[in-house]
Image 1: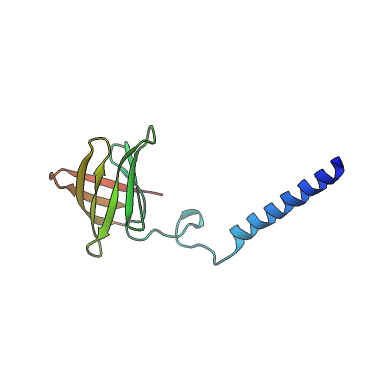
Image 2 (image 1 turned 135 degrees about the vertical axis):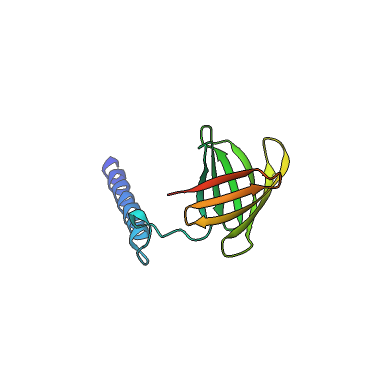
Length: 128
């Protein structure tokens, strides 16, 4: 019985490895970005503030900002592209339990210059 379990376990591991290999090799190869990753488009992706304290992720119209030291969610909400390089961000500060709003301009592929509804300015840099 012990030999049968060993053979079954080895067979299962082989199938799992083959399935994972198929996942990583199937499809067209990525291009454009460093290390073979696709080049970023728009604001999609991860951005960090100038002080390095908050990490914001933008994906499919939603955003979330977490503290870099604790991983605690600081804010979340949604974003809308209002022009080719302009984005409007709205959401909630979970720390203050208050609404937030920002207008940002993508001045380069890796930099967002933002102004809050309270007229405070800050910069986000794309994390690659």
